[in-house]
Image 1 (cartoon, rainbow, N blue to C red):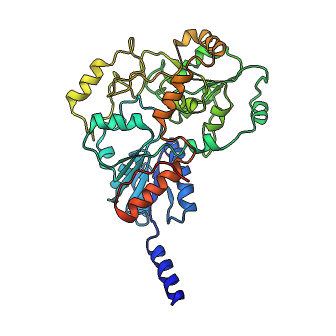
Image 2 (cartoon, rainbow, N blue to C red; image 1 turned 30 degrees about the vertical axis):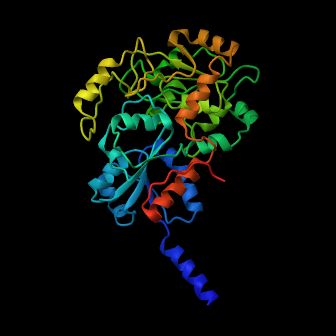
Image 3 (cartoon, rainbow, N blue to C red; image 1 turned 90 degrees about the vertical axis):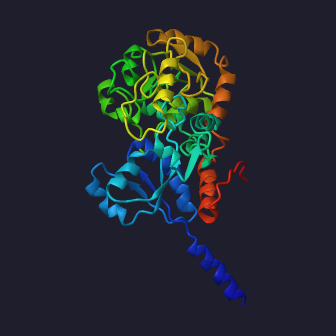
Length: 373
């Protein structure tokens, strides 16, 4: 009898084995999903990490084997799969901590998610303004940050490999995307930083094509930018989520004040379909976006995403000097935005999200999980 009971329990677990697959099409999407995928494998999920190709014909073989619910960090793989004939559901994991961007929750696919995981409370606040009736969201954190928090680096080895000076502060320049559209945005501002000692430049993954032109680094697929954030003494960016990631490690940041930011109001969205928000709602946000007065206003919220020195590119050396002379000036701001950008931020985001997905898969209930033993 005991053997039969054990068999029945084991068999019951086997029949409930989770079959959910991960789908990505961009490097940042891969980096955002990969830590959660590793946790899923360790927990016995029947899961595969699929790269979804641009040409629909190349996705037909995937269509027959991929699960009916996929986990994504961008809608691109979702749209590509649907074009190939797949017609399932999706769970959304955010691909960054850049709460300032206008596209977060602007499009319909966010609101059609079976589960949507907010990286932090500020993202939840955005959703409440955009869609107060949305019921499928849970606070999860950001899987990509688990390694940032948990993994150590060999600082001496990195300094030697990168040919940096050991007695000088290390400066990381890691801006957001937009180089394709504007010669004054993102990585092109490196022209103002070229005379800075111990500078490391890493473009956004969408701008990797320009890396060779500007002597920038392309990080490895699996490690990403995390080791460089840990290595740096100061992080310089514009509206990239790397600012919040640095704040989580209590690293001082400098935010570049530019004339425009890709993906931020009042820039016009090049995407014209799948819009959830009304035209009037969007036009009102565009109208109220004044970069001269509030360059870091978060889209849809009356909040400013500032956690460090704000500087024009041409004044960057002064900003670096000011930061080095008073490292703790923005300490409370960093602490605030670290908590607002990443829920719990304990290096267990992937495990927390996996447990919430498992609970939903088994019960159909969306249950918020907080502390983990």
